[in-house]
Length: 321
Image (cartoon, rainbow, N blue to C red; front, side, top):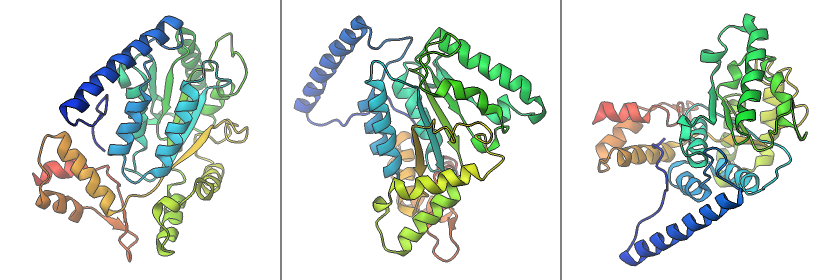
């Protein structure tokens, strides 16, 4: 996927530019007013939902459901001055479909420091929880970390990557933080955001997308109602998933299960063109075609979906330049 660019806006004529400057000034005044009223400006929380929506529209290829769900959930949550619970999203799909890219966009467009903000906390099972035998210590440390950071700032973002590799049972310490109670351990936590990322359910999503293609249905006709039950079942049936024995799904603490569809050839082409633009390079047909030709697609007969999505696009472009 393309690199994040804050303040995604189309540039047009001089008149349009002047209009944008005026709009920006008005937005700055409005933001200042909100700060003075205390609605925002908690820690370095600086939500730019218009920029997020623009970036998703331009750079996230082939994910109509993910775009709609993420934007709708964030708008409802961010503009609510007194949410009853934290926002909890679980992103599911095949590798390279944009899950990590979307999580990085959320950090970028919600916090002034982006992923480097002290209010954005990123957890990886390989880095932070590598030894399942140390699960008791991990539980204690994770509970303490979340509680301490929410005490310091309620407007915090917690990203949990590769949930299908998390030690089962670890996430149960998060359950009290994800519900609708007013406080937990004396901490006001209702303005926090929790994002869980997982490949689990990816195969089931691919099957639904493939069946839709074989039935000559447009990709955009695939509905959340078709995908949410199969993703939920895939997670619940997997005893090695991070949600296992956590009560998070059983207690319906997720605000949205966000599916990411497998990417077709024209989506990968979109990613290649975006990457070339980020590098400041003109689109070259031979480079685009070389990247596509070097990409593996499945199933074997249809050659429809990219095996790695857009994950290896940047490295392949560098090879063919």
